[in-house]
Picture 1 (cartoon, rainbow, N blue to C red):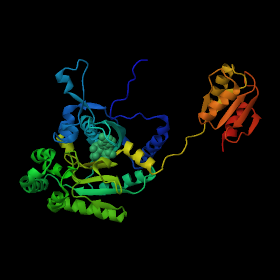
Picture 2: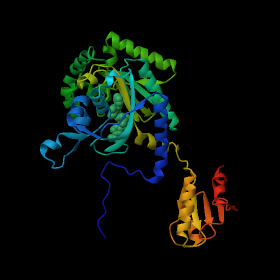
Picture 3: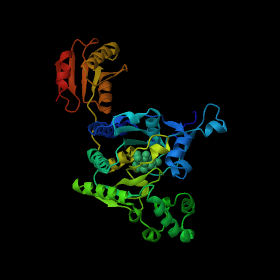
Picture 4: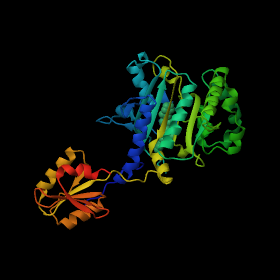
Length: 421
Ligand code: HAM
């Protein structure tokens, strides 16, 4: 026998038994995207590496350690470094916004997308090299009302997919006016303590001191004493954050302030947010996250515009909902077309086709075998009913309820009505 080939590490096959839970989440995504007035955008799965380097920041893990490079046909050094699979969609969406001059459209622009993202990290439970996000972006709205609206939207999404106990963590990391002071304070605090930091954090301290705070190996005692971004906000950032908190209170949406929530991508300003199942607030378990990125559009060559968005991890959401027992229901019942005569394949296909024309979900038995075997196989496949052709052309038909065994004779045009509850 030839050697088997397995799926790449860190990827998942979505088998038919998982598809129903997944489709249910997709239906919620489509419903909410429309209900909140978002328009769909789809950008390529790969982009120029430079887009991610400039957009997400050279020091972000996604760029520095996890970039999934794609080679051109010949795979020369130059081609290898030119493109990468997208680690996240925001940079690509902003690239498209700038490239197509979308700033001339009525503002704010509300966009959504859903699709696979790629990060070449060490695979672990809940961390994959290919994973799917639902992403929403609002460009041209300085907030804070839209910040609250998006947090409410995320909560509604989790409630609607049947996930209970989701909590929002919130922080503000300031902007170009006040962040430099916060950065200086972090440097002043951590530099004398550098030998107590992980090698990773010692590097972060040099390139982006904020990211020391989201090192999961950081000694909690050091973290507790570290400067807090909220203490360094300028008046405008402070007013924005206070406004957001008040709106969340008015909507009765609970949130916890997390001073270490600086996020892993460099484009954030002001609001940062992450969602967790309560009690599972570890870094690998974020169900979703996002925040404001008021400077990114300018960094990518566009007219400055305030913007905010989030990405919700669909894989983690489905897994968490299943762990809570949600989404175990069965799909719509199918009718199996079978026949008394083992060889009446043409008759079965003709009847199945006519029923499909009438909108009935049908599977048709294509094997020449006895009626008993055809029925057994229909039950195993989860069909709710069998339509039995009593003669090769199906002049005489019998409908059988496969759960109760009840059956009755009927004409073909009576079948759709007989199946409706
Ligand atoms: P992010 O926090 O990097 O943000 O990713 C958002 C979500 O994607 C995470 O909370 C998690 O649920 C899921 N996710 C990330 N990496 C993995 C992985 N390796 N395996 C499974 N799930 C994963 C962003 O990507 C930003 N673009 C969000 C955003 C949009 N900010 C503004 N607009």
